Image (cartoon, rainbow, N blue to C red; front, side, top):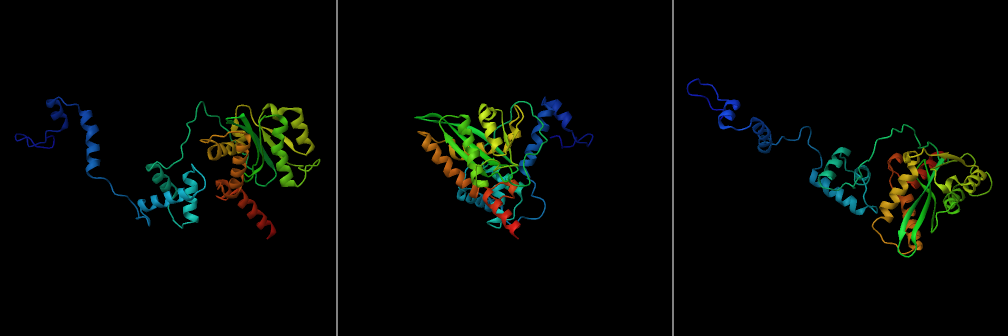
Length: 297
């Protein structure tokens, strides 16, 4: 009606006049008009036509998620595997869009509280410069809460040592570090790990005299995380989160031995196959092997 012309003036009535006569809010008209127009004529995708359609890309994404031994992986790893294993050249943002539209993204947790700026860098350029250690608790039916301690290499995020126990004492927390020192340096004698720094929080296990004196005996220097800033111990914290998401959450454990077997199986699989972005999507074992080959050449 607003586009029709008046027979007397030969001019269109206009939206303002028609809405005033019909007592119809103009805001409602303008709010509905663009939506109706977009529904009638949807714009076509600009730019060159992709080599693979969204439907085929979605099938490839679902196939990749099914063949992965892990759950809840993000779009970056899916994009990397599609490119390397399947030869599918699709942009990372397009993979993200397709996964988001089909509810294939892993669930994320919203941030709470105020953001804290952390401009430091805890990833090292060489191995055996800094390790991180932390503990996590798992609930069981017969034994109650049990502890999982881990020691993680900051260079390639490899889990070099771990220990599952009933009580989270300073002695048990030290076992994960001892396993890593024995495996990497070949000995737990005095000064066997000279030059290594150990990043840890201010838990009672790590601030105890026994723990600090023992790592000092191995030649390891203590590197303390900032209070109430877990991102400064982010390598160990991130490993614990991955461990819980992949091997702990959603399962019911009867005793400490079942937790120990689950952790052992996951860490073996994690070090061998878990793709990490900072390693150029190589697993920790692959990153270490590639470095050894480069040094030998």
